[in-house]
Length: 378
Ligand code: NAD
Ligand code: DAU
Image: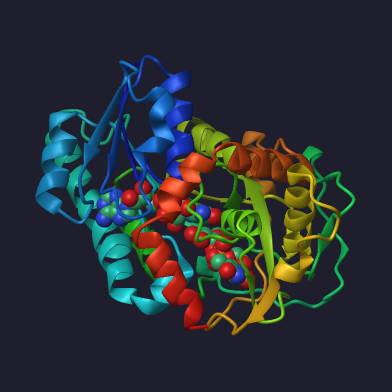
């Protein structure tokens, strides 16, 4: 079947991997990438596919309802994979309004435009899907019951590494009650509710997935892993928030893109799937792995960059632990992460070292000024 698929936020980190996967894997689909190109959007992320015949880029703002109406109608969109968002927690603490505008009002505008177009067609919602990409942060924070970590109860091909720990006995399930703490997660939670409301009220075929922390190539260097790789290369301090005890569950971005592909095609309409790495790390332990890997690949002696670790004031409202139970997705659709964490980190560090020009283009100019000011204020 020929499908015209709108992917929003396709010039960002995860979106660019999803666009690349769909453009290459489905030559019979028309892929329309809609992105406002905020500071986080970068068309250099998609250089390798920009001339493919089944790919179109449109610069637009999801919060512009008339534009969304026009684009969805003109391109006869039948499926939407919605990733466009403001995504950085620290920015949401400084500027919550931008997060409400894009993440809440933008999602609502997209839902409304899709509803109007799909309801105007003779077959209405048949063969249509609005797939919303969300985060585990909507569930709030889990207790850190064992700061040393215990053997994780989950095993996958990806988790046979030496470090296979859980830092508590509770995990986020699809049924876990929403309890967001940051303006970012509050805005994502609100957008999730609107998506489900469009299903329950108007019968729109929707789906929501909530994923844990992604890492890999093309991530904007304000996020922990690319920021620290870049700072080590430039002998800059590595700002560890608080005591570095917070725990995150890390997933390689291409595994997330594979899950999105599977769920878009096989997921149950109106359902929710959690996506996670079965891969919990305390920040400080992860940071030590990053330092070790970068130093080794740069030919520095072991321990050379340890002195860059700098403990700074904690993030306000910093969630202690995220850990996803994604066994529903594993059982129902057969997905699991493919890459062992050590492989993923090695691949990621190598990519940033080999793509210094990509990094330099982002970290010069406005972003350099923003980061310097942000760091000075800590
Ligand atoms: P990102 O910040 O790298 O990319 C976001 C993209 O959205 C950018 O290209 C930006 O230009 C675009 N955008 C922002 N505002 C827009 C607007 N008003 N109109 C159109 N485009 C706009 O984000 P990411 O890390 O790739 O995250 C993508 C999605 O996945 C987000 O919805 C995020 O909440 C979710 N998510 C991210 C992670 C993660 O670890 N990064 C984990 C789980 C879920
Ligand atoms: O859990 C999914 C979420 O993961 C996504 O929804 C968000 O879009 C994404 O940004 C990410 O949120 P985090 O806040 O967990 O990611 P970040 O990379 O900003 O931080 C990871 C951890 O590292 C967190 O505990 C804060 C800490 N940190 C971060 C930075 C940038 C530091 O200690 N120092 C830093 O400089």
